[in-house]
Length: 397
Figure 1 (cartoon, rainbow, N blue to C red):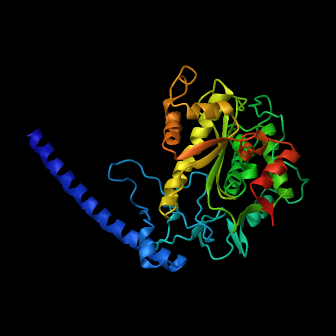
Figure 2 (tube, rainbow, N blue to C red):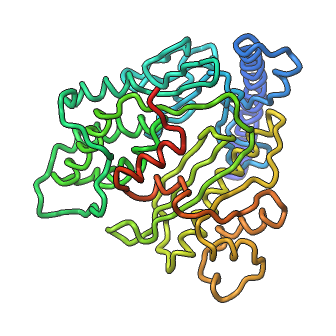
Figure 3 (cartoon, rainbow, N blue to C red):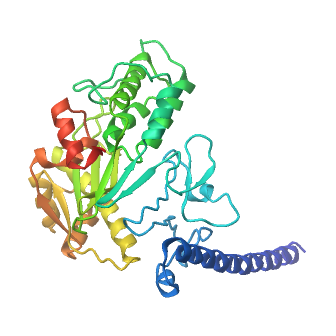
């Protein structure tokens, strides 16, 4: 009797699953056609070109093999159209709040409304000029300075003091947790166009559970720096080679709490900074070489993602240059034979070797002074800091 009931339930589940699959397929087809139509009307593509973009459905979370597929919907380069989601754990499916899918919508940081990207919005602003595009968030900077009462304060030359490690500081007084987290969240959204504050914001964000007065003072210094540099933005020149290249770096044992290293990486299309990362490594590196090797592997992971994205637009970036300022790391990447010096490194980081053998990338030695990824791993004095932000074309126009 129990077996018969189980078979009946199994048949009912099969029918329900089949109905769900059929409805999902039809919904995916509708959504995909809508998105392609939007690309044709908004970006001026003909039907053949729009169809070749292979725009993925927002609803289709997995491919046929069942593996997770990340959302991506990127406009062609230098069109001025921006699709951006909050860095504070906002996913693409939270952006689609209107019935009609619009690929040129932007989520504002203030009231979570959908704002069409027609000219200037409350989030990332795109200013197209004859010789390039300037992207900034100066209006948003003015808003958060006013919101947290930093409109009339002394300015700071850098977002973070040098040679000052952030510690738990358990003996110091507690501060308002909600205020601290609100300030960190506002700054995290600003890192969408301001890599100059990326490292400082990530360092302060690690103390959101029990923030102290010392941590609060460090956050206030970031706001004082923004007060002095409110209009900095990324400059994308029109006349620039369209080659993909990347910079990788790490700060060995830079985290004072657990002595883990900090990974920094940035990717360029010619002279245009298109992606940057700052992350504390998950392992405790035994040497600077290991820390740099892990950072290089993470940097290549981002390069691989960009290579696959650009294939949708018929750009095939082979032999991408990755600049590293550590000679030992370059030797390990090029040496395809495992030996005792690399046995302790986790296997998942060794995929960069396979990519080097297939000539998907090439690793090149660069002097530390020329490695712009340094900006994302540690704090600097004023002269060095200004040199790096000028090198990545973070300008005040």
